[in-house]
Image (cartoon, rainbow, N blue to C red; front, side, top):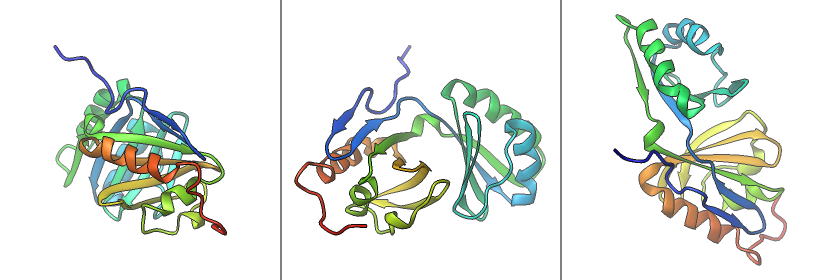
Length: 185
């Protein structure tokens, strides 16, 4: 039997922002027509569909718009299998898919007033324009990721588990003291 653990347990870096690996996070991807997904998500997770490039949050559950036909449900790790099963049952015989991707992802928190600057060094998106509740699919350096702003001064970066060390190292390098960008806003 294997120990269940996150991609980089305890990884943290204190630069001109604080980087921290978030630990185990439950994540379920849902694909399908939004009208098909709406009722199942309300029933299984108590969440309404978010607007385009937005995240809806209720308690410890967050639902992110990833594309017109894809949502990402973030929830406590231990709740993911049962919630995925409820969603699969609710969507049975519908043209939709549900996948528990909790063990396939890594999650990093970037906290501090210059978090947008650190991400801007790696991501081709205007990170300074992101506001709380926004999410963007983009890339960090050369790998796919999503960036979510749950609250002012905090960014959450989600990437594939297989590139977790690469992403953490790139973030740490970008957050190294002395690497601040003059005039970034």
